[in-house]
Image (tube, rainbow, N blue to C red):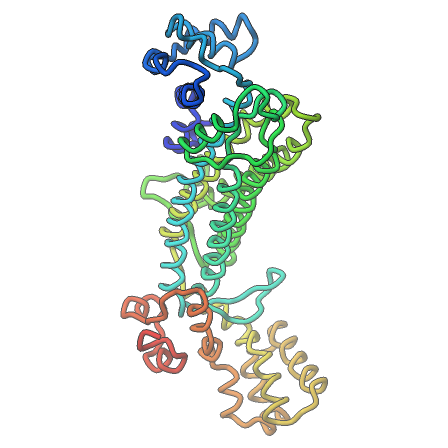
Length: 458
């Protein structure tokens, strides 16, 4: 876990101290379960509860024995004395390790869920704020038709919301414990002991286990984080593309004393979004490793262990960090509506071509092929700089005679693209009330707010 990309709450969950404490908790709960069954004397429990963790002694024994759990058990037994013989009764290492790991992943998932919720809220607020901020929609990286920045962000909001649901389901799937003995048959440990431990730790009991919990659970959890990373990458990539000098429609936060380049003082690079994209790549790699950990030999091997020591803490840390970084970008996003409007009007409004096409078909009754070719030719001439598209349409004798000035001007009314955006907000459960602040940001007319049905708190 790299401190640079590790939130302190995640680091605390996966620290050596936390891991060893969770191991000891499981050992003590198992002893309680055995005492309830009369397998060990209840009088031994007070002494067992005085057991201590000596990290240095555990490390010393592990260096000798080459086994971390065995060293842990031996070191803890030394702090208890004679009653220490009841520690680890009937258990195998994976009973302790896998069940403790389940509590770590569950606790990390709860922190990540809060981070996703915070980003979801930030995207929702920005989507509402900019629901009338007109900009170009792009397909294949090329101007398509106008939409609003709010609708664009609402799409990302919905995607993050789905990712949160997916991650919650995966967190439940991995919040499972097991104390079933050497090959999962409970031959050496009663299911009642297992149930007592898992119930006390707020874990579900695995219905069936080998010596380890099946790793499809962990693969699902890491894959959910990797998908969330891809969702964040899509948003970050969008912002990076919109921040390109030739586009310059939005800009990620840039602090007062920040330097964009050690050599070029003018630079403002989208480094935060680029960092999110890099993290997403690492998460996808971890998902591949997690899936490869599923196919263990028979009742278990240890090929998954070394990989999980890296990927599980790191994946949780990187996911939490990327979410917080993306939230910072979203809330601090600098929006440039004047540049957005200039792009809409590029080449004299050539992006209104579909509305002109539709008007020729509907209002003038032209065959579609004739209308398409006529509009396509005017768009070509506009793009080649002969004149603005609007001017070419107005001065085209056939089109002008067929449509009339009123229909032509209606086709070039950018506000028509806003007629149904309130439906998107209603479906997402976002507010659709235009405020004075919105008017200042997006400069819509009050008539437009009424026309598109965004007033009156619908």
